[in-house]
Amino acid sequence: MTGVQTCALPIFTLRVGAEEIPVRAGFVEDDALRERIAASFREKYGWIDGVIAWFRGARPRILRLSPR
Image (cartoon, rainbow, N blue to C red; front, side):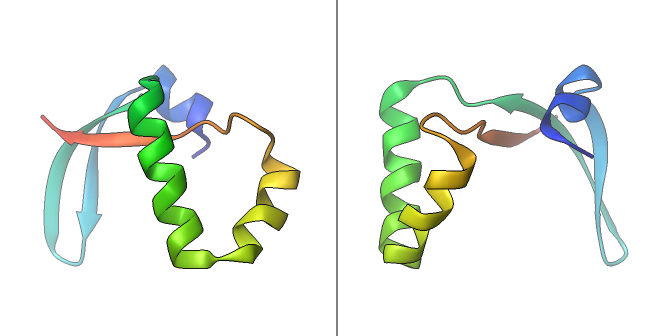
């Protein structure tokens, strides 16, 4: 499912092994939170995250899954 499809139908069940977790999906819009997420990716993936950023654009769509 793409981010657009997920947000069109934002309520679904995530299956992990035998466990089913009801979740709601939504895009992260808060700029401070988006920066924290981006910093975490830079810390984890290093320079390669900069290369990927070139393909995904300056403001990638970040999805958040929240329990229902």
